[in-house]
Image 1 (cartoon, rainbow, N blue to C red):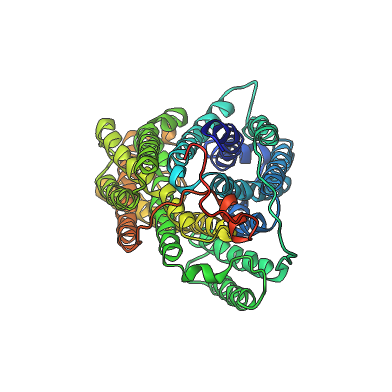
Image 2 (tube, rainbow, N blue to C red):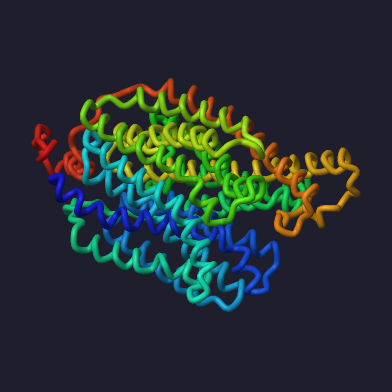
Length: 520
């Protein structure tokens, strides 16, 4: 494919990826209003967030495996169609039960988009040219991440729109993506052998992952970390995953081919992706709360304050991708990105309620630059080192573990945040001579800062500032471990043929292995 044909095909992929990211971020600032309007409980609040994340994370490997067996274009359009159905159901929900169900449907569609977009890119673009296009996807990821909460806050604050448009707004993008894919994406047909889908393995993987994700999401909030619920969920999850490994090792068409982990590059990039998920998502998801509670900013302003990190990610992913495509050298950017990400998290561990926005912007930009150089290029390294027939499985495994890391990091660091805030507020109240509970219950929930008297507000701001800094301090060793993992990845020359060409060659459909690529 020529550069123009690739860009045309990517227009649909980028619209689809933007939709997937938007689904997970647009409700961030709108959820309090949504839950109050539907008359739901705090546990329902948790499940509205968790349902989409669980469905997306658990189904990513399934979509990846399906992409190795069936038409990738059709699967992409199917996932977009599921997203449209889920979005319409969510926007029309009159009760929290339907809203949670619709979020599951959205999550399944988003899981397909997350896995398949990168799989299709690897199928049509040679690894040597993939870097610059991966950088564009990094930019779309950055825009969707920062635009989601900002758009959600604006929609909720606009009286003639309201929270339902947080779900409706993604529908036009999804329909546009379906149309663009139909018009621009051309994947050559490749003869495939008779295949069987491992439904038992798929069920065991999804059930085991869901049990563990439910545990890390709810532990520390709905029940204690050391409790019978923890024992039941972790035990069930472990047993199901052990059974899944047993089944997957003996079936002809496993959902996750265990053999790919014998590939050193895949194994190391998988570990690095998990650690990046913990460090990046677990550390930064609480920044918006820090902006609003500790710095006293509005939801809209809090969204805008994330721009330095997003711009850093956008610039570094785009520039690094262009340079990698031009030179064919990639490991140095993984190592540099891991170093810069570790430094950025370390710098953010020094913030407090009095940190200036200028200094905070520099710290966030450093973190964004590191993540931009590292995250997408881990996928590039893995895709370059696996057979074409396993591109889908390898790509989805990396996406799966990155999402898993983000879920674990968010849950564990959220529990640490709650504990540190409670301790700091108690210490502050004791020092100020304010009776316990003088914050109106702020130790167990996020307080409404506008209703607090001046002395209490200062204590709460300080507590959230100190606690948020501690989160970045805890996340820093995860980034350091990611750096050590990346160092051991062996750099291999980037291939100059696309996944579809390699698949045709591997299946014997193409004999001329010296075939060149237009524009390569």
